[in-house]
Image (tube, rainbow, N blue to C red; front, side, top):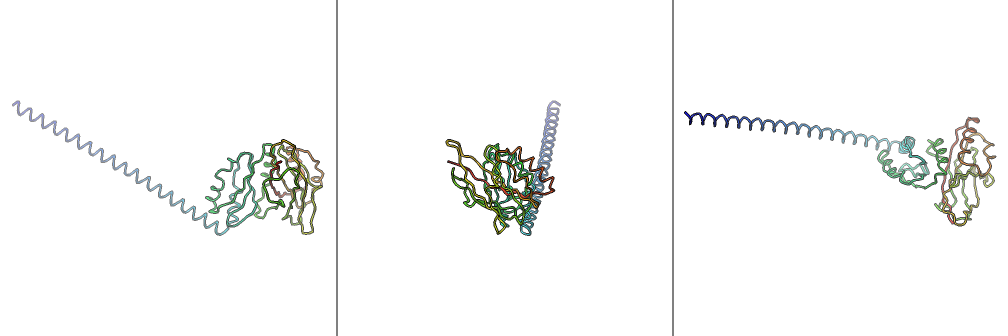
Length: 277
C-alpha cells in the first residue's frame, strides 16, 4: 500500500510538473506571439512613416521642379528666425537661393541650410554675417518689412568684400528701384543711424549710387556696419531730413509713422561690411 501511495504521489507530482511546464510553455508562446505582433506593428508603422516621408519628399521634389523659386520663397516666408537673426535673399536662383544671414550669434543659423534643403530639395548658399546687439533694432525693422518678392531691391558694394579698411571709400549702388524713391541709411555697431542722402547720386539708368569715407577710431575693435536702402512708391521727403546721429530705436518708429501716413509699403535692401583698421 505504501508503494502504491508513493507511486500515486509521484505520478501526481509528475503530472503537476508537466502541467506547469505546459502552462509555462503556453505562456512563453503567447508572450512571444504578442511580442512578435508588437514588433510587426512597429515595423508596419515604420514602413508607413517611411512611405509617408517618401511621398512627402516626392511631393516637395515635384513642387521644387515645378516652381523652384516659389517653393524657396515660401520656406523663407514661414521661417521663424531666432532672436536678432534675419535672413534675406541676395540672389533668387532656381537651383538654390543665395542668402545673407545677419545674427548676433552664428549658432543661430546652424542647420538652416540643411533644413532649407530638406524642405525645398534645393541647396542654398548662406553667407552669415555677425552683427552687434546694438543693431538688433535694425534687424527687427527689416523683419517687419521683409519682401516676398523674388526680385528684391538690390543694394551692392562696388568692391564685394566682407572687410572695409578704416579710411577707405565705401561705394556702391541701389538697383531694381523701377522708379521708386529711395533713402539710404548706415547703421553703426552701436546702433547709430546716418542718413546718406548727401552722399548719394541718382543716375540716368534709374539706379542710385553712393560713395562715402568711413574711419574707425584708433584702437577700436572691428565694427560691423549695416547699409539699408528704403524704397517707396511715393516720395517721403521727411526721410531725407533725418539728421545724422539718431538711434535705430528712434528712427524705426519714425519711419513706420511715415509709411503709415503716406499709405506705402516699403521695400528694403540690406548689405553688410565690417570696418577694420
